[in-house]
Image 1 (cartoon, rainbow, N blue to C red):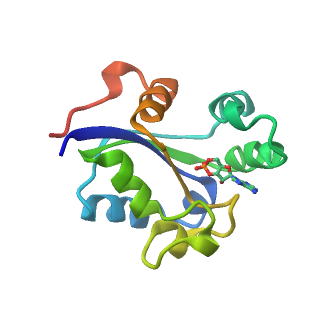
Image 2: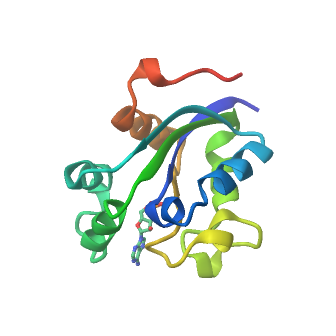
Length: 142
Ligand code: CMP
């Protein structure tokens, strides 16, 4: 199995609920290592650019408002099969459909305030990491 990097955001509902450590512990217990991290407050422009593919969706305004409502933790996670592994750890986008023991089942409030973002493919991971990090920020952990 190949070592991959993926992109993760711990969203404002989780930072405000003081669950950053709990979420990171779930990544680490499942074999992912933090390979870059930035704790920041997204600007409206940065959040809109990140979610540009959803621009025409009815929830776009709500999504940008939420993502700029508090601090976020931006991370590169590295490990075997990291993109898919991260998606398993997060659980389904809608917490009502998330499996027991996943981040979203444990900590998400709604489909909007769903605690974490994770890249959906290796190509998305590369694009999303480059949107927030310099190449020199990305450490190799394996
Ligand atoms: P995320 O993985 O960050 O990617 C896009 C986000 O849009 C998604 O998580 C959800 O938080 C959000 N989203 C998707 N569908 C809806 C919806 N119906 N209403 C509000 N937010 C949504």
